[in-house]
Image 1: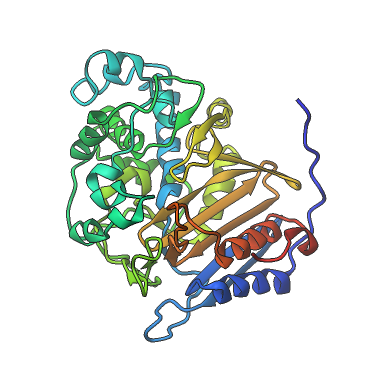
Image 2 (image 1 turned 60 degrees about the vertical axis):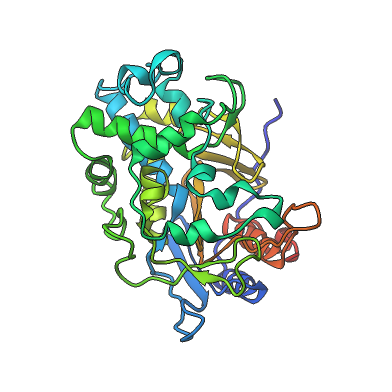
Length: 387
């Protein structure tokens, strides 16, 4: 296999980074904020507004719903239990949760398969949110279930049952996985079973507090505590103008995507995780052992145990992205720890569909790509224009 040689880092250029943020705002995102680190240097910036009605500006230190970035935290908590001998990485999940995953399925699906999304268990989201069933045939889609579930409190077992009742996406342990939030609720139930405490408390004690994260946590209710932006959901143009969903009961994603954090906390978390400060060296080896996984948008990604691998011309990065209603986040750390970026936007699903129902390219996509290139260390000329 040919090894990609990393190009030299361009260093931190505050003007270029701020310009890239401004381009995202001008392309249509109400507010965007980020923190970028290189060595001992840290840059943070923001562009746009946190509230389109009042014009309140977005700020770099705001708390944000970080969606599936939560999975890296949950994975770290599970690997800690593996290190303590309470969980076998290749043990059947049915050994721990026979009531949730009974029979042959429970015997064939392992903890590792849940962590790398090769379990073959489908995502429950289309069943909890019937609005998602019709996409990409948008004439049949409505946003009604988004609003119906705003204050609904789901039990993990109820969502897990929806995923298990759906047709499998493949055989357990297949060579290609399919991204599924059901896996991550099962991992939350696993943590509760082996530690005797709620999964959110386990992650908080053993990962968040261990990492010294002061602004990260699972929300106690539907509100985001502390300074934060409103979160605008477009749902592929069906909500026009985009509607604020910052107040929402996050039990619909739990240990898969419910965390609230800051960009500074995310950079600190991944620096510590990948530097061996949260799990041991053998666990990090397992976390970075990737398989091809089909993401929810249909793209193929390299996925480990709660970590994405992203190869660029200026190095290999590890981290995760996340989206919930109205919010998007991406956090990446270079393999050598020398470069980090965490970026948040307060608009989601801005791409309108074409006649076939596929999302059309949008200027926001190109602007984000340019920021990611600059923030991960590419020279500005390598980022290319926003499209």
